[in-house]
Amino acid sequence: SCLEFMNVRLKGIHGNNIRCLDPVSHLHLNDVDWHQDGDYTFTQGALNFFNQVDFIGSHTFSYESAQTSTIDSYSKWLVADNFLLKIGRNNGIDGAEPIYMSDSTSVLELHDSSMYVTSSGMRLTRGNLLLGGEISIDIDGTSSTDGFAFGDGTVENDFVLELKAGSVARFVKGAIIYEIMSQDGIQSPYGFAQIIREPDSKFYINTDLKLS
Image (cartoon, one colour):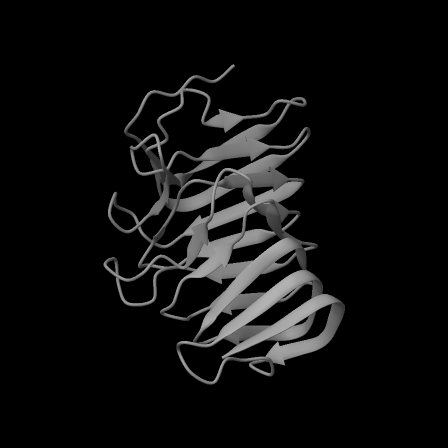
């Protein structure tokens, strides 16, 4: 089954009060503002993001589904305003990836928000992770198998990490696995930005990287 929200603002979201009733159900979000008034857990089924979808509020969204959600072509999932996105593979390091990006026009944007990657880790390919404002990324996994991976070492699944002008991306702990094929895989095309690696974080750079 599939439920679609289009051109709406959803308020009062908390707990699990919007949910899929079985693993094969889909929730389509198409030009939606998602406002939480408490912490929320998505437990099963999949989300599909179309056009602009904004998750707003100083609460936690925990993605615990074993299914993969999709950011469509020419679409953006924005996480903003002190929001915490808690996400990772559900069934260990061999579980399905939580997020699939359709192509290079698919964007996950974190703006003045935080991301927590669980101990099962995750990998983003094809699309774009866009960071703006003050960003904190906290990763439970500490190895090249259970960390937060960008790209997979293939051209067809290449990935871009882009920082907006003035942004500060702080990696608190855990492992980043860099497997982007393009030498310009980390970009800040519009002005000065910072990446801060705290002592408990580590970067595995498995492909060439040019910072300029």
